[in-house]
Image (cartoon, rainbow, N blue to C red):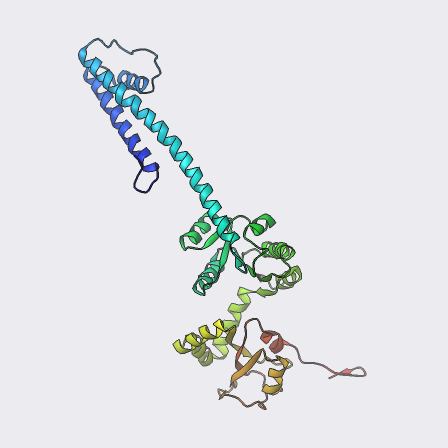
Length: 354
């Protein structure tokens, strides 16, 4: 009597509905013989549960004999079936859970050089979606059953548990992983996960999320290769739109540029807009000199002057000015921000600093 889906749950509900009909019908039949509702219901329950406390009233007519015999046959048989399907349902659920957990564990054990994403919140969701579109192998680690349900519904491989627990990281295959991204909203949790992951896999590339700027140093000291500050990135994007609206619109909104940006990312490159701040070491330097400092990590393809002048394909001897906006192409994770934010070098002559 299993349902079409192979689960006994549907059959259990069906037999319970059958028993409800039997109880209501038998109770009504006894009441038709002049019994009260309480006596009739009591007699039916004693009969179908086979308690054997005795008859509530004498069963001394052919009608009552027929009602009682029918109640015994249908009620007792129904209760046996309810008990059987109840046990089967509980067993089925436990086996299904066990088999599902073993299947996930086996799938994770097959992975090598995969990616572990700790946290399936807003950032984790977007990260998982991009990784899936890129065809990367990854495992979501989270302890929230609701978020894990959403991840499983999306077809992502999940490992339930607290990522700050080393046993959970081992279960996600951290020893065989290539990259771990910890994107939980808690800085303390991200620091702890970074420490644990680094101790379990010294060669692992760790990318950590930080909320407070002061956390960046702690995450780097804990072993993170890169630290992402969402608030800082958002502020940079807003500044780009304010300072260089046309360039930003061209890069971010143009369909051709979005397609080019996707192609570059597949090659490990990215297009970005950076500004030349006053007091930094690159003010007054030529483009060739700045690119040489990056040791081939990036190159400048356009310069936007503060007055509105746009210089495409700038010559190598063009000197940068404070307030310039540069469109650069560089390797992911390259030293672009470090070079463009470095303060100007100062020289000392006696007690005077120049």
